[in-house]
Length: 139
Image 1 (spheres, rainbow, N blue to C red):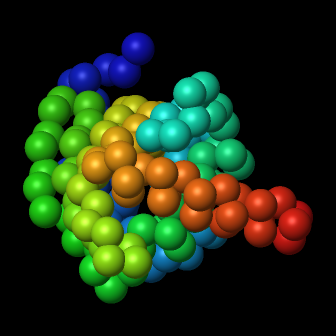
Image 2: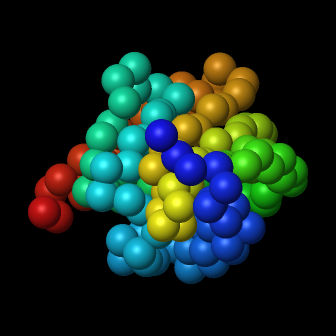
């Protein structure tokens, strides 16, 4: 259980925004907990651990992180944040949210992504699959 009194959500958000702007997967090591859980909008099982979460977040950065990507809303709790975003890929407008939870050490322990509309989910699913296959081939 996360000790709500000791989570600095603002510092965690600042680190996440810096990471998101850099698009450097190596930077994820410093902000992800070893046991982080990634919840994808297209994979029905939680992805557990720093390595697989890094792969998913790096791929998502490549797929979604175009010049059109913009965080448009920020909703905070004691231990996390919901970040609303929009982007466009191949003419399809995508809306989504990143739901991030931090522990008292300032590390991300859960990262959940939700997307809409269905056409966008299907396209992102295909493109993420391609990116993850490229990562496997490089390993």
